[in-house]
Length: 511
Image (tube, rainbow, N blue to C red; front, side):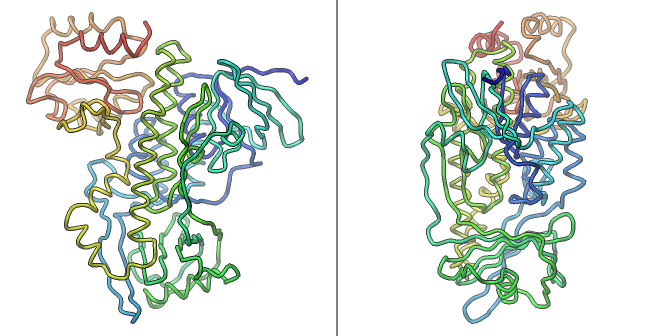
């Protein structure tokens, strides 16, 4: 019988979700292990887009981490749609999807390979916290007994280890072995009759602006063209299954389609090719006891819009601080129930948004831009852009659904405050209590607030903002705004209504 190792949190899978969860637990000072059955990180990239909300998340974590992405990635304004009809007539909509009007400091798509995204997160985790993924370690067996989860791990040499953990987070991908072992039910379907292919390749003579994402559509095809850091291009093709010959040479197939849209392109050396069937799956539950699903283990959807990896990252960002608060005795275990309550609806919305783009652009049957122009003029496309970017997703309750202004459950933007950026001033592992006043506070008022906040020092960092921007006030009146560690608003009330804060604390924190 192998010796038993005990650890508060075991993360299985070191892709985007697993690595960010490891980083969040490290930031909060929680012990964990992160294992992955692969012998080393993947050198290939399925996702190529980092959206504005993910960049905001990195900005709240660490400026150096953010700059890794902004320096390496290509800042793209959005999508250009290229159409060709059966007669060979070319038309375009420019822009098709415009990301430059996003309400964020990052009004663009960051084109950035998933392999590099995960590498940046791992590098930051190691350099800042001295932690690494354990590669070549497979989770072979899981048993949950009460609050204890017993896991059998096996390394590359076949040596087994038994681990007991308080919480297990399955970040092990769309074919999650943990989800299957625990017979976790999913709902979903395949995009019937659709085959997708990626081809990373060096292109010469691309005649359009390579900083844009180019969607090329005809009666029987769709191809996305994206330039990536490093100089090569990502080509993504969606074809009806009866048109996608399995033995066709990818360079020839892609080349024939691109020739219908552009002149003078030459396909050179291929870097990587993959082929798969697109599918939709959503786990019926994100939690069973002390086992959680995050990332692709919980939800899988069309690649359209590039939301997948971003949604995975944001799952981890939501769960990380909640696990830390519970393990550190700052919050009751019931806080963890909110993970599924908040993230599963987002998973459903991401699937719906990706499906809408897939149907509109990737089905390969729309060769007339009129429909797209109509949607753009109606504002529907800009609403879709806000959703795809992650900015419009929220955790509002039904009671707050229609209220204007910042409400509990909303993402708090990176506001410019008199003393600096809100995100820069809140890079820590606690809630931020913004004390916003239209003018200066008196010494007596400051003393009153300091005394009222004293009991919450373990979970709360106050930030006094005099001459606050209008977004933090309510009809010009002073406000207190409680911001969660993941950047969403937890509470807002009049500035000196500390009873509202006390009520929130009684429900959500442990003294």
